[in-house]
Length: 92
Image (cartoon, rainbow, N blue to C red; front, side):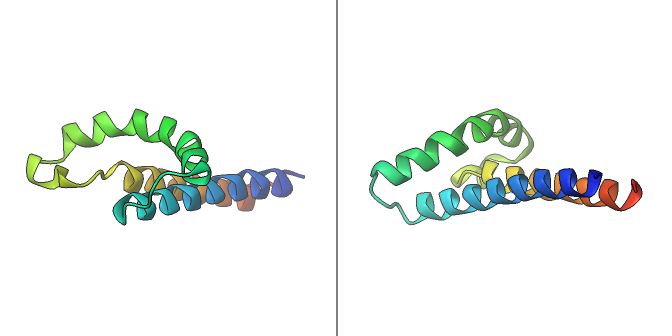
């Protein structure tokens, strides 16, 4: 029973990490805004806005040329997926 629940939550977290990655790539190559990029930004930016000040405090100023908050969010999603996978294995 818990396997399905943890797998479903893991799938949602993985899809969110994929959306963050796509948003990161689109901002790096500077794709012009359209309805899809705006929708993607509306989905991803709330999490990035939370992580961005923390990442900017940790990183030196030389590294702040690009926004590293998507990398941090993807890492957090990976850790959450790992914890969910472990819980799925641990609980029968």
